[in-house]
Image (cartoon, rainbow, N blue to C red; front, top):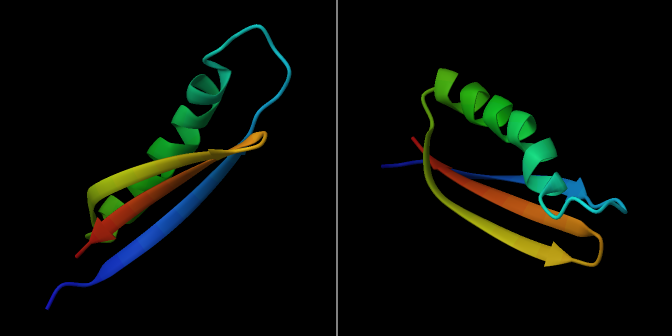
Length: 64
């Protein structure tokens, strides 16, 4: 039977003229989380993103 986990990452927006600042600043944190789970045998199967106010919520869905 497969196991499933959800990891939620939250990033907050700041006032800037760079429209892609959240994507740029979140890449390292997301990659670090993916590497951490991969070392433990987990596989990323899906993602989801929701923006709420000044925050971006990224959901990473893993299975093992």
